[in-house]
Image (cartoon, rainbow, N blue to C red):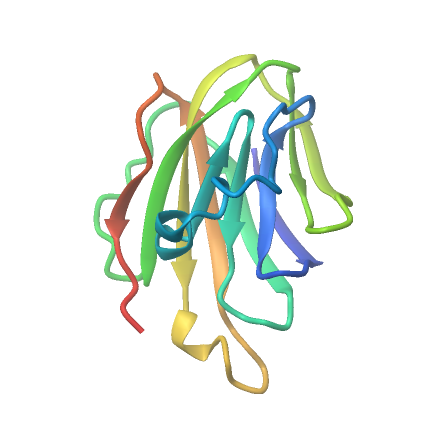
Length: 154
């Protein structure tokens, strides 16, 4: 399944989460200093995805894969980070911040998943018409810690 999404959010973030997530996005541990630097926050059942532009514009390609991503060359991306997400409800959502408007919702098998977020054109984020965009891939994989595969240095 592959979707292209366009939506608005605030506070330079949006969420990918299990519909019945227990995580607290308001916790002081959610957007820790390392989470900000890595552009990805983690709580139980929810990932906070940091965007670069401060206008709240999100252009995002989202794809559920049958196996681990085959992308191993990150030349076309500014920042690449991945983390694990556990699904309990059978429903995966993308929601905005802070209103929790559901931007995408799909059924997905319960279990542990790896989520990779690619950030593109981050150096245009503060121009009059920001062109930063995001690509999210998700596949079944055993839990492992957050890992930055390519870091954006602005």
